[in-house]
Length: 303
Ligand code: GLU
Image (cartoon, rainbow, N blue to C red; front, side):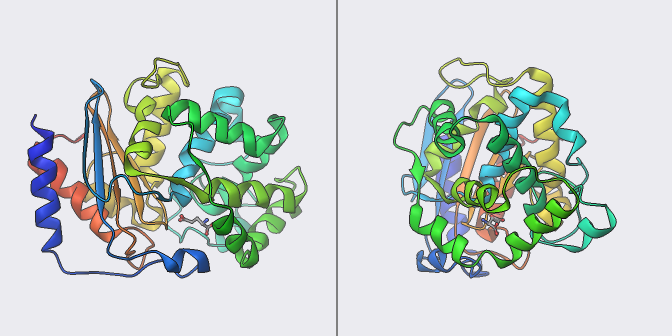
């Protein structure tokens, strides 16, 4: 497969598409990002890298980080994490409160904010230095020691945390947060503020295409855990647009409101895109289109 030519074609064709959406306004610091940035990076399972556009510029990975916190929690708690969070698509917005009430504080899945906050609570309990240990995990799986938090983004999210604070307090009232709420939120805002380039993001997700092994050969999860995490991404990775995304793209993937997407074809490749303009569901419009073009042109999709 000539990925270089295909990425070039996708990049050119994507630029002719109608411009849809705008940068997220929910975190003030993210409104400063140039909406017209656009990058794609693909790493093949053989470890060959292909990048185009702004693929070497850092951006805020936001909710894409939720896959990596679940991976870390999964690695030491295994199936026990599902006692406190479900594996069903939510059909609701990423920051919705309503389902939590009638489902008695058990979030539908770990990729909506409520679920990610419960996973953050598990990591705060299990890690000695939660924020640093999580960062070290990311640096290990990506092979990139310079990956870091963006403290301005973390602070900006903290300053406007009303809805996430409501979710965390609500979870606490059901007994599904065991640590101090502010401590858990602080961890969650930092995990979301992590910045990566498209290349670093694709490298971080490599183990999910490689039966649990990182590029450097470290076994992070078992084959079975990887199957489960990829299945969750497929069904829940794009909030209440997961069905539409699956229909168009046909690859497990996860989006974030920073405009990033990571997606993968097991045993074949990992691809990441970055375009900060979001559609009304909070997903990167151009990124989704680029991935649709990729699976259409290559014929490579899990379906
Ligand atoms: N940090 C964001 C929030 O909690 C993440 C949402 C997202 O990327 O979808 O609102």
